[in-house]
Length: 216
Image (cartoon, rainbow, N blue to C red; front, side, top):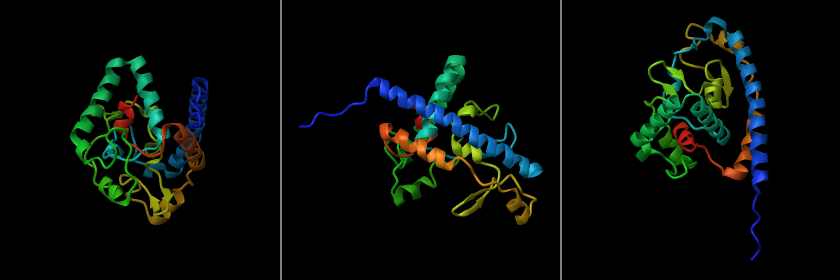
């Protein structure tokens, strides 16, 4: 039998450091994109602190998103342990209410990628607030570490299905104004590359915020 090749601790730590640095660079790209998109959208952008419309309902996140959230909850615990504990309690309560309907592996938190599971996920926890959201202040406790979906939500973003935009934004805009405000999304290639690198060690698949937080 061939000996199993194992990654040394230094190699694992080196990869993690590389991913973290790459993620910082990715966030710099995406946050700069968002600033330009908001400037172009102007008064049509309704996103404000305390608006939690985009924090309602579960959504899939990448491994890179999950790792970022885990760094965030650890850093929050170092600054404000009680606040971090409340986030984790909300994550646990979220899963207690919804675990039986989760279309994936309850041990790993990884979503099933089959068409049937994806269809089930469309209706999964749609009325639930994100565990990272403080229900009293309507502010994200992990805002600096939020997933990519959260970062790009609001301005017009072109996808395979057309142009997506927050339902609270551009409510009085014409289709021409929406099209004029669209800024081509940046960072997608960098995010995909980082995710491929991370999946080599942690495995493939997407998860949700609650599982990511409790995995920290």
